[in-house]
Length: 218
Image (cartoon, rainbow, N blue to C red; front, side, top):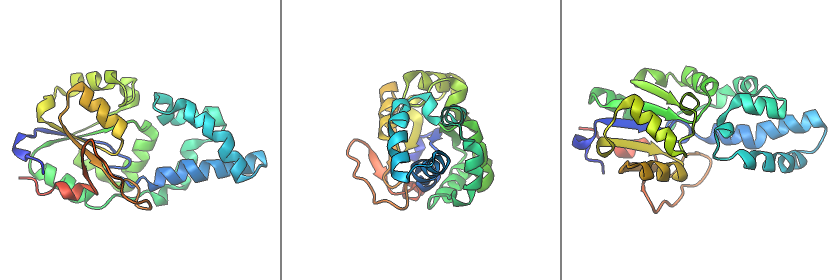
């Protein structure tokens, strides 16, 4: 599926690629609205309706992923709420096996995420996956989300990777398209980022259910 002899660097998304997106979907679609509803004294349905356009306005922007922004915008301590729900953070199937294989093959492995650093730190603490990465790059450090071309310019300046010898895996099709626009050609989509939902049909990119389908690495 992947010609590993032509890969020097692997860039991996976090949420929905390494980690089950179930946690984030539950957190933002259920837990935050529930907390908001209880505080405002409204129904959960009303809270969802109130929050939907607020969330939509920031979708695809760096603020969408910024816990500080949402804490201030919603007057909710988002990182504290995430800590309360941290027991539901789970690693997707075959993630550890894949990361271990990369390390054994001496292929550079870089975590590239839009997630806020507080969220990244919490999830790495809960899963222990940080040991497998040669570097971690957060969009907030660069100043642009992965949907933006300036993110890719920034990460290439930091890493110096060759686009034709770099594999990028993500669950977001819009982000994969952004990477493709930048010049990356080895692109893989995760078809089932949330274990509670059915797999998606992906037509524009090579798609796998989980990282285990990219093994073995030789």
